Length: 190
Ligand code: HEM
Image (cartoon, rainbow, N blue to C red; front, side, top):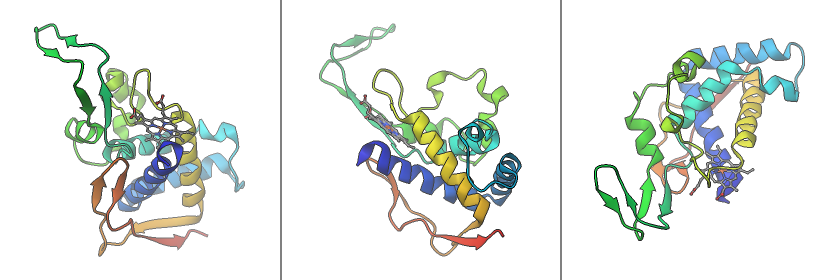
């Protein structure tokens, strides 16, 4: 169940963990969602586009905890780089998004990395949770919307905090999981 199921489950789980671990960002997302919904308890399609801060948090969570830690490709023909070095056709090249995303940036949860001004000069391939090119994720918009809905409906009802006795232990298999699960406490908001 790679496409569209385990990926989204992983994305939502790590997102909730990130926000549980960063109450200040969790509160800001909740305020944003409450401001958009007012007295409503369900989301409308138009609401999703207004979740600016929550979207930045989702992207930051995908950067630190990419549900697909790596993708592999087989070259259909050899490539020669400008400096003369070549990659042969048979080589299966692996882009380790997990490595890439974590090494190129600080390992601190900072949603403002994805503010409009901060992303304006950034290369489009600097952030690759959904891969890129011809075989990128066809469900990425759907996945982002699923994550927004799950986040909004959860934060409207619950305050999240991590269980300090059971920190998650990441295992970057095909899908990024936690070996021991992700344990959070939920407290009713109202
Ligand atoms: C957070 C959620 C998701 C993440 C991080 C994610 C990530 C990815 C990545 C990295 C790839 C490329 C894999 C590769 O080339 O080896 C991919 C492919 C794909 N994804 Fe997603 N995905 C997510 C959700 C979804 C959803 C919700 C759907 C469908 C509704 C979906 C459908 C697909 C399909 C069909 C492919 C194969 C595309 C192709 O080979 O042309 N994904 N996804």
